[in-house]
Amino acid sequence: MASACVLVGCAGAPVHSPPADDLVVAQAREVLATQHPQGTRVAAVAVTGAPRAERIEGLLAALGDPSTRLLSPAEWTAFLADVSDQATVGVGLRELLDLDLGRDGRLVVITTLPGGPAARAGLAPGDVVERVDGQPVRTLGEAVARLRGPEGAEVRLDVRRGGEVRTVALRREALPAAGSHVRAGRLEGGALHLALDGFSADTAPAVERALEGAGDGPVVLDLRNNPGGAVDAALAVAGLFLGERDVIRTVGKLDAPVLRSVGTSRVRGSVVVVTNAGTASAAELLAAALRDSGRARLVGESTAGKALVHAPAKLDDGSVLLISVGRLVRMDGTEILGRGLEPDERVSWAGSIHPPLPVPGGPGADPQLGAAIAALRR
Image (cartoon, rainbow, N blue to C red; front, side, top):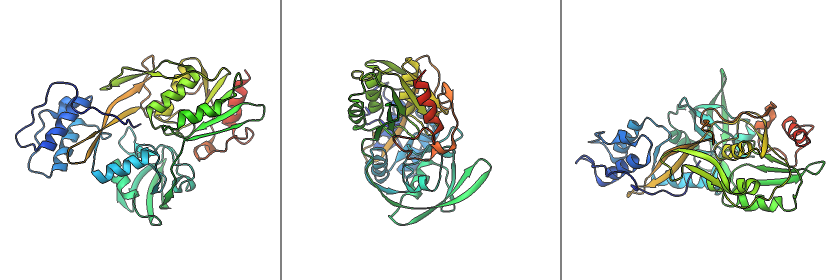
């Protein structure tokens, strides 16, 4: 989950760095001290005699948080293309969205970009990437750097699923800009099938257009294989169902202890939300907001349990610290991170993890959608 804004060194007492720190290392030390929940750990860490990036990595090691990372200027540009829905070249495993660190530190697939090489090869939520081109990968940055490359070139992944490891060959290709992430259509019987596979600045306006004329009609909100995206966009979509209200709490170094949905409700009919193991981050925020407010029931499978909030801090040499500034919890304090959301009605279906799923879907071929439609009638 990415955030577009950050205030560098805006809180806390100044951190006086050791004389050996150059200005950029000192800046990194202060940013981490003031913005990371465990930032006090870097105050007394001595980092001397190494290239600048290695010294900053020494500060990061003191945090014990592999999700907080240093990105070079080139890595930052590529990261922005991934999380900002720009056209890119790749295999359909976007950094921080489709591929992230699991709680055990292993590189795990959250979901796959709909229609991309990884999706076509059958990679699925929970798959662990152990090697890229035969080389072990220990960090997310290392893995993503090896996944990137020229269009048409092949990359080989050793992927573990349960007790089995298989090698998957993927060919990098041009991936189009994601657009609004919204698909909609009318199901038999008149319910609106509204599927979101991410959140960007264009998502809430597209959802509002899709809801025009919904009136008192029912809505199936399909968040399967949605890895998240912009938090503000998820809050704006929540507002189209809830109006303005408190929907999620934050823990850590975030400006707002409680996040609110925004806007005016456009939906009066019943709502069911469909989730699976690829429902993550901002999508979990939206699902929790609708479920915990009493506005919707959840049908499907447990979500990914990915609730960290990241903020970027640009350093004077052009590199960027991507900092885990906090995490999201439900309004009653229940953790999402590592636990996910449990559906009100559990319906397992192995086919749900292979995007893109058709919209409007066929409930006869999609048992989770069929259960959602049945729940609307209760």
